[in-house]
Image 1: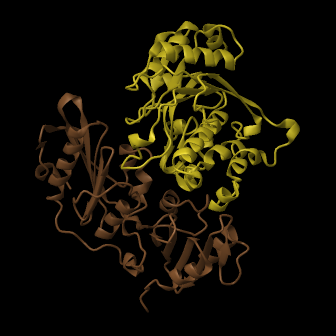
Image 2: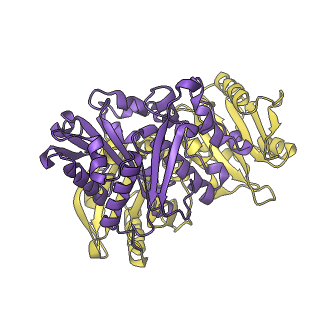
Image 3: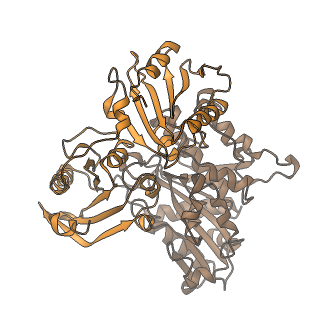
Amino acid sequence: MTQLLTRRDFLKGTTAALLGASLGFGQDAAAAKKAKVVLIRHRDVLDENSAINPDILQRMLDEAVMRLLDEGDPVKAFGKLVKPGETVGIKTNVWSYLPTPRELEAAIKRRLMDAGIAEDRIGLDDHTVRTNPLFVNATSLINARPLRTHYLSGMSGCIKNYIMFAESQPALHPDSCADLGSLFKLPIVKGKTRLNILCALTPQFHGRGPHHFSRRYVWSYKGLIIGQDPVAVDTIGLRLTMAKRREVLGKDQELPPVPKHIQLADTRHGIGVSDINAIELVKLGWDEDILV
Amino acid sequence: MEDFGRSIPKTIGAWQAAGKDQLYDRETLYDYMDGGAEVYLAFDFRQVWARKYAGPGGGELALDIYDMGSPGEAFGIFSCDREDPGVGIGQGSEYGFGLLRFHQGRFFVTVMTAEEGEAAGKAVLDVGRAVAKELGPPGPGPDMVGFLPRESLRPDRTSYFHANVNLNNRYFVASENILGLDRSTDCVFAEFETGSDKPGYLLLVRYPGAEQAVAARRSFLSSYAPEAGSEGLVQTENRKWVSATVWDRYLIIVFESPSQDWARKLGASINIPKK
């Protein structure tokens, strides 16, 4: 069961607590899980036209993964994630209004190759991952997508990015997409995700219009949120989204309705950590208007 | 809908139809949109006809014409997402940040571009005007909108819908569907002036029967206002009042009321037809 949230929780100021600290209900404190997430930002990764500087983005990815894995060299850090001879799928996102940037895909691919993965054994796909041989045969997955709100699930993050692995996507839509966490237990996915990268270069904090996209609700945050735990990464992404919504839309609209799947990915499906108190958030780089 | 391929101009100003026109129905809508399909499926959506236009300098413009089944449903989908000023296209319209939305008869239309600048905005409006001419006569809106008192009503802030997902995106009430809303329920959400800078809100829900309305009120009060007495009236943490009453198969909820009397008066002023 999720904790029932009502508008009155906003009025009481208890929303963040309900979404964070209380999510560990029922867990044995001694056995509580921990997760580490790295948020890295760089003022110059985007120019005034939002064009990406690929060199800076590569450095951001490298620094974040090194810090995540306590490793001093980016190739060695990626070498902790994948081994030569593996087949690796990069689950990207091709949503036309806010796709995974090609520069980010290239940065990931470069480090995978540096770590010894043959180029022809690296898959890069979104809609056809269920039939793509490079994903069917993958022994490791890298999960990379932009951070945005979603009309039904509240937030589209690393957890929801795996919906293309589902046999039926609509089957996961009921109750605000409550059971998206189950995707990580599918045989094609289970135990294979090595890294989750939530791209927050230009996150979308509110949606409207025919495709739930409006450029007025996208901002240049210039960040990446990276971790090995997709739930912890999305928990930080949700915190960021809520902070921006609170700043722009007001306190009573801070929660995008209704991202319960993040909490349930922890408490119902056990695939990660949603308790903010159990997440070590490491912040690197530019900290102006960091919001979280 | 296929006739739009012939009747909607392929050239509008400097913009040319590009690629193949597409048609999606309730089964295939997910192929077209990620993040928005449920919005339409919560209404009586039938089909959407989609065309892209290419403009000077590589710009793109997306035209979507949705057959919503009836003028009331077309008004509904339009009314749930209004933020911008009207531009006089169709029965009701708005334009801002490259997005035109309007409804005409049983059709709801969006024209959108990611391009910035005056020329792209003008192209969006030109396409909208050309499309509106092809959509036939206007039609009547939902009957429930006519039940609302006119006094102090903000008419361009009235929404009509059926499902909880629409309510929560319009005005978040609860993370669970505590009102039991679905395709069988009709809802109007309206804003009223209160004499301060903050409006009061009215949610009017029509259930298939009176029993469901009573059960929904009980569920709402137990989840949202457990301290309310038999009148279903309680003061919330922001010193506003919320009330919930039932009239036959209608549930009437007033949110953000400045006083008990204001809530009672608004609730009593709804012109629900006698049986």
